[in-house]
Length: 484
Image 1 (cartoon, rainbow, N blue to C red):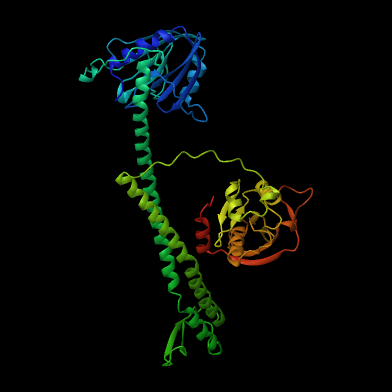
Image 2: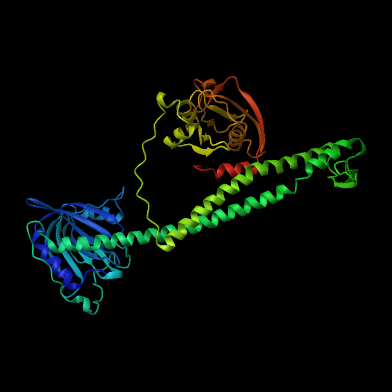
């Protein structure tokens, strides 16, 4: 609950003598509903807090500095433009109401800062000399530009009884402000924690639904792939009977020599394809089955672990055992790896560098970086990549540079090579066709092409790998931890 009229009277009686004749030298807006005025009087500087919080509307001196946003909000900017440097001529409470008026003399003339400390509808307004509203903390457009009309006075409640405040002392020259600051500090902290809980619950609800949908989609892909479990057997049977088959047939009946009973088996065919083409299709689909088992199942297990952690956190919030995380410290500025970093583990280097590039994690846990444009391609290859890193690019077409961070002397695992090559293909002109050759080499064999546009390089000792875009592989890469 905000201040009563009696509380406001006590505060105004305390702060008015200390601020009258002072100059507003700084203005801040630390939160959506709070403004602080730093007022200089001879020999002292006071910080006055004006809060319009629905449950914490108040004004008083504050000794505890409040963190401010990186950029001042619009209302704060407006106040700085109009009343920073203004002299405080008078501070008074509207008789019997929870409204405080601060009369000012600014560069543009007389003006009034009005604090309406009226609970849910509390607001802070700046009025010109004609009592027209120039700005509203709540951005109430219906009031801005209009002659000021105070809100309807609310009936008195038992809370309006005057509170007994201690007398000023050497260590507490402003006891009303000190007690109010202590009272509302914990109340606002509790409110902030409750807000964090609600916000986190909403985030968790979305994340849980998203994770469940991803698991369902992956299980559906796995079910589709499982249909191809016996297709290697069909391919082998077709291979043994290629000489008896002709293009245009919709099925073929063969002896199933994998069955001890040697029964006959009818295998469906695509009449538009040759016998060799039908056989290749069956082998290809069986490879999808094998690939799905290697890639989709681990991905499902990972997401299920993430889902369990999300549900555990959700339950902790609901039963009251959840603690808000500590505010994150500012991240270190990005830097190019020093020579001493050359032998660091790939995962460590990846965490130290956020970088401007797209980032993925391979199936083997190695970081993969992808340039977004010509400028990033040049920075990635010529400044960020180290000599033993793997470098890839779609062969013969425009596309992104791709770099895999490797330890000195290490060779890229086969799955990592395919992951990186897939990304090089995806972010190139081969994307539409979905297939093509990707060249790869060590970064030390890549040189900038002199006199050519940014990102143009010459490559030696390259090898090539043929890649077709695979949805399962792409899905894993795009949902890899740290993917940006």
